[in-house]
Image (cartoon, rainbow, N blue to C red):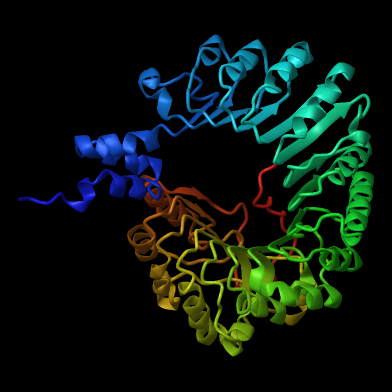
Length: 502
């Protein structure tokens, strides 16, 4: 009696499919009938249409029942309106103004649990709100660039009372309707983009009526709106408005150390704290309040807080075992050498600049590689160079992290899950050997951003070409520096943060 090979068992193949990129699933589905039946549902699970590929695949009707997520980044047509995916859970309509076909597409999918829309035409709003109010499974709503008619404001609030997650940006309401008399008991995650001062007032009024709030994220493009929202939010947190709030994510330029201290004092637990756009918000008070929460931290972004660098950065790496995402300005290699081993072994995304004194690079860089090699779940590594931190300029610390095999790159063969690596604005001297090594050992790699060889442009282009032949996207730095030349220009463009805007 012959036993079935494990790789022929549907449950095993279904588990494997969860971790395999789409490009490989397409290949694996051709191996056998069993593999095809196991992988096809995952191949069709997420469908994306855009201006370059606006039409449906010819076999869509045969596999529409597998589609769980549909994203349309082009003007909807009658073909889109006629689509029917009986198990669709998530629908994204953005990148263009919505029309009647958008409405018809939405109405055909009452099973939706998530809906994201951009630029809803006023002509169809009344019918839209009436219909969507009947979607009993909808729990996540994301809206941007919507102007509400007076009669539709309260319909919108009524729908929001059933939401568990709201993402709102550039909403224009002539009045607030019955907002002041409503409660949003189910809302746990609230994310807003604000570009007018009036919106700050609106969203503060909304968020204080969400007793179950666990996460708040805001991005503000207007100076006065920023100040008003920060001030109002800090007061709400300090007054213990939300007993379950454990996640604060802000790109505000106006959070002070005092504000941050009040926020942390008002939170019973902290799993996410992102204040990446504030330069000096993280002072000694904030540090002392954060230390007792190290054991529960999952995400921490102090990307532009100068005071969070140095010894504190090493302390975070060696004291936060639950960390999955971390962004800190820089860490001195000497602190790593003299500090405790890193315990954040589940880290998936890391953004940091490693700094060395020129005389210690050869000695300390292998120790940094050794610590990085322990982060076996790392998927995104950003070690970009050149910051605006005057401390580094004064200390003459060298930021370039040398990614060559002769310097210890081979230790990072343990990073099998690494998909993205950034080393923009660093001085590299990689060659064929390093590129071949990346292709062989980083089998999940899909994106490399940075100049591979800053000494020879043609050679760098050839190296990037080799990566692209293996399906790895590349982007060279727009400017190059040299550790052997003049002092580098410390002004650099601020990279966009990890979270996508609504």
